[in-house]
Length: 152
Image 1 (cartoon, helix red, strand yellow):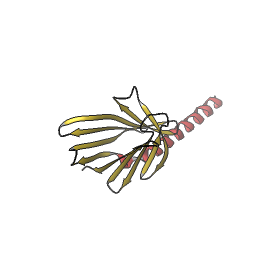
Image 2 (image 1 turned 135 degrees about the vertical axis):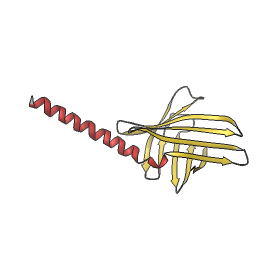
Image 3 (image 1 turned 90 degrees about the vertical axis):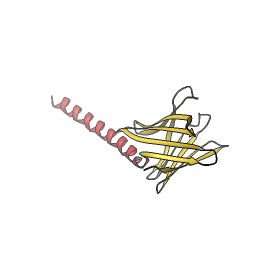
C-alpha cells in the first residue's frame, strides 16, 4: 500500500512540475494578449491581430486584413505548449493543414519561432517595444514587416 501511495505521489509531483513549467513558458507571453491594429493609408488596408489566453497551455488568436470593408485575408492562430516546448500554430486557408512553428527563442518582450520545412514563412518574429508590436515573417530571400499598435 505504501508503494502505491509513493508511486502516486511521485506521478503527481512530476505532472505538477510539467504543467507548471509549461504555464511559466506561456506566461512569458502575456504581453501579447489584447488587440493589435495596423493601418496603411496608402493601400487603405487595415490588419488586426487579437490574442487571448484560452487555458494554462494555449493562447488563441486571429489575424485578418481588411480593405475598406472587405476581408481580404484571415488566419486562425494559436500558441500551444506541448511537453516543454511552445509552438506557434497557423491555420491559413491556402495551406493544406495546420502549420506549426517551433519556438527557438523567447524573451520578456518577444519570441522567434521557425519551421524550415514550410515554404513561406520559415521564420516568425514578434517584438514588443512599449505599446508597439513588430511582426516579421521571413525566409532566406524574403522578409515582410508588420507594425501594429495596441488598440484600447
